[in-house]
Length: 376
Image 1 (cartoon, helix red, strand yellow):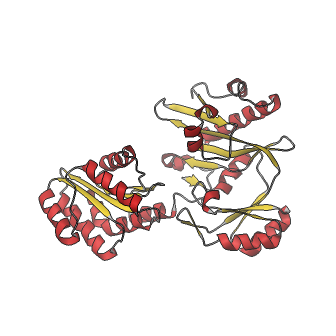
Image 2: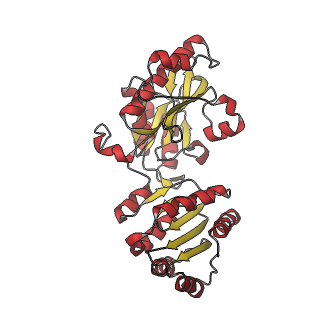
Image 3: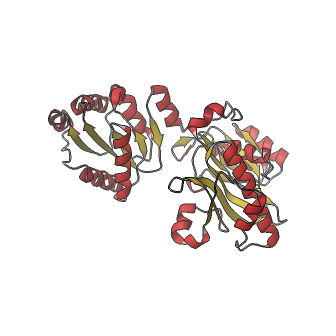
């Protein structure tokens, strides 16, 4: 579960961290009223389950209630990162002297939580790590020992900040770790963590991702909180397992293992998968909604169909995919790789009905799909 910013900030505030004064609204008039109550200038932020909203036009500014209403009118109903904006957060605009980064996530290789922090906040952390990895600090936590204030203070002692700022940073990390554990979070991130001109630490943005497997015991989560993106919610209603990613190569494969291997191969060859979508088992009967959901992601520029049959017959799965294809008539280019039981007939169906030549090797199909996406 990816919590939208305003839900994440509510948890931060309840835990004792400082967040800007703000209000969630869904009409321009309510946005103007919020600006009057909060006091201009304000920031108007699209509330969607996606990062990098600022780079996608999802963050605007208003110096008056009228400008705030105009900004809200531009954002509401618009598309940000492929998601429709239904609400905006109107928030006070603070005078910030410095921006930091802090996050807690799970390190699957070390099998323990890891704290990440930097004195260079407000940027894409992946870009920072690639450009200047020495500025991204990390510390792994033994969950049996936890993280108390003293341990956090020792952890940040070498951070190039004034003594009082290091104390505040350690306190913020300690609180965030407690929230991370209590919410069964996969990611708890504050970016940027601002330091005001008065020296106050304030969470200017927040991303909380909760482990779906733990939702049943998370009674504090609001019932109105969205579970997944719009397309993920649609897939769930259809009984399909779909996870939306930020790449541009759409994926249809049978079996969770093959689907993940396909995504790994796309990444290995320099591409970016746009989704996880598995059409194995009886899911091939739902090929039409599956294909429709994958193609509904505006980031998808090519499609990779990768099928491997053992007990399942690839020709039966292909029949379902082709039926959906001929009804939906997608315009994105596609690459196919078919192997296993029923492959001779499956390959013939693709050639006959789509006039597409499947690839003999999966790796060749993967590279082709990446190239098609790049050329789109």
